[in-house]
Structure formats: C-alpha cells, structure tokens
View 1 (cartoon, one colour):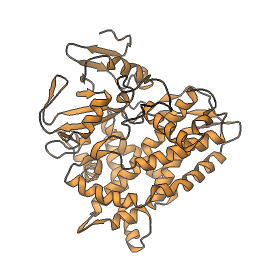
View 2 (cartoon, rainbow, N blue to C red):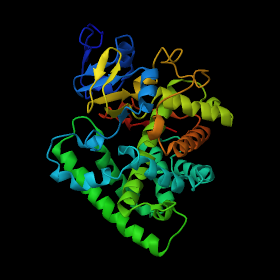
View 3 (tube, rainbow, N blue to C red):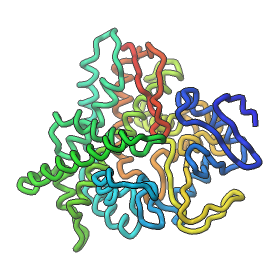
View 4 (cartoon, rainbow, N blue to C red):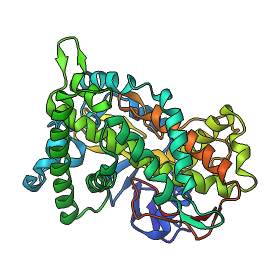
Length: 414
C-alpha cells in the first residue's frame, strides 16, 4: 500500500510491515509512520523485528497488564537472550539478567519487587527535590551566558546519573565509568546489535558486577542510609536479597535511573521549544509543571518498544499469538493514538485526556517513575526559568536507536 512514506511498505491483506528501524527518515521522526499505521488494521507483523506489534493505546495498555503475557519465555529465559543461539560469550551479562526485576515473572518477580521497593521507597523520593534543584542550578551555572552548550552532555546526562549515584552511595567520580557500563549493557536491547556490541556488554556486566560486589562489602562493614546499604539490608519476613539479586537490582536501578530520563529531558526541551512562546508559561504553578511533564512523556516518549512473550494461545485482532511468541508493544505509537487523544500530534499540557504508557503498566510499571517525574519537573522548570531565551541553534538529530528514542545532540544558545 502507498503510504506516501518512501521508507515504509505495508500490505493490508497480510498485515506485513516492512520498515527499517535504522532508516534516518524514520528514527529522526517516527510519528508520520505511526500516524499511517493507526489508520491500518492492527496488529501488524513488523518483518524487521519478526514480531506481531500493537500500537493502539487501549491494546498496549491492556497487554501490559495481561497475565497471559510476560517477560520470560516458556523456558524461563529472559527476553534479551533470544533463543537457540550460543550464549557462552554472554555469561556475565546473562548472570545479571537472570536476577533482574525487569526480566522476571511471579512468584520470583513478586518477592524481588517487594524487597527492592522497600529499599527504594524508603529513600522518600520527594525529599530529594531540594538536591535535584540545587544540582540543576549548579549545572546551569557552568553555562556561558549568551553562549552555546550541548545540552545532553552539560545538563540532561549529569543530572540523573549524579542523583542515582548519590542514592546508591557510589563515589561521584565513578559517574563516567557507570555511564559507559550502562550504555554498553543497554545496547543489548537494540535492533541489529553486533557480536562486538555483545562482547562490550558482557565485559561491562563483568566489570560492573565486580565493582558492586567490592563496594557492597564496604557497605556491609560500614552501612549507611544509601540505597546500596538498604538493598543489602532489605528483608521481607524471612526473605532477603541474595548478593546476585542485590547486584542485579543495583545495576537495573542505575541503568533505568538515568537512560530514559536523559532522553526525556532532551525530548522534552525540544518539544517545549518547538511549541514557541515563553516556555516559562508551562511552569507557572506546580500543577502546570506536573501537567507539562506528563505531556512531554506522552508527546515525546523515550522508550518506544516493550516486548512480552505469550504463555498461552491468545486471539486478538483477528490473529492468534502462539505460546512462546513475542509481541511488540509500541509505547510511542500508543501515546499518539487518535482514538485515545484529541489532536494527538499537538503538544498540549492543558489537554483533558492526559494519559500515557511511557512508564509501562501492570506489574512491570517502572519502579523509578516517581523519581523520574520529580527529576523532570525540577530540571525542566529550573532550566527554563534560568534560561527563558534558550533556543535550538543546530537542527536536533536523533540517535539511530529505535527502542530508546532520544537525541544524539541538542545544541542550544542560552
């Protein structure tokens, strides 16, 4: 079918979609393709991923909660491992994934999430607001007045990595190394990864684990009120996190605690500036600020695909998903569904139909959502109040990464 998009081919009779996620015309602006697909029969089979994909808001929201699907396949293998391939070179990475909250299902997931939540919530996320605000000001103080800055490197990246590092009790000087490890491991979830990517991810996992095991021993000897100490001490009646579970949980919290937030700050700044006018109007009151962040999450989501395995035959939309098959839930597409939102392609924090699936839903709803929301509210408000004349000085360019949809660079004048 002619979609008027040269990088997209769709056959309605077979529901086959051919769309290279590495095509610059697509990853630099995914939304025209989503708009076209919203007008077609769903679900559709995305050939490049080999998955039946759902992009309607109601479908995605329902399937995130549907217990007939989960993150482990029928053999209990975490989603990122694939099936049938030689995994010997990924032993360290797989050891982390085997105990990852994100990759497990009940009853293991229930026990682990209870323990991790107990440690994470005990940090009382709201009490971090003054520290996040002070850090945002410190970073902006380093901007050259009237000059230019690459905002991802100077603001969007250091803010969340500093906060999650401080929460974990990890030395601030470890920040760049933690980022390198995190980026290498997260690349395992992207389409078209290479053997070199896998080798880097495995080495990063091994080094990350070794660092955390060594640092955890110090925390056992001298416990504090940091998150690592709380994870070590986390108990639920007679249950306690094993060292492997503690290490995997710390890695997940750090990786998830900055990756999406970095992209959402960049995507949010771009969306707000594209709206025109004085950006401070979006942050006039706490209510305005919260609504603006929710619209940024809907309008410019940082995560676009979340996959799940079927545990039993499931009939949906005229097709049957067989046990063991994966489905792709397109979060970014769902957030622009015209059946769920009035004028979905308009950035409107005042909309009355505000909702999004950017943090997921169901038992895998992002455990760090309260922290991410707080960081976004504070970071964006402080940035635009301090730099109301901020303007994009070079055309923003997105990274070649469909799953984690974020900018490669965002150069602005301040």
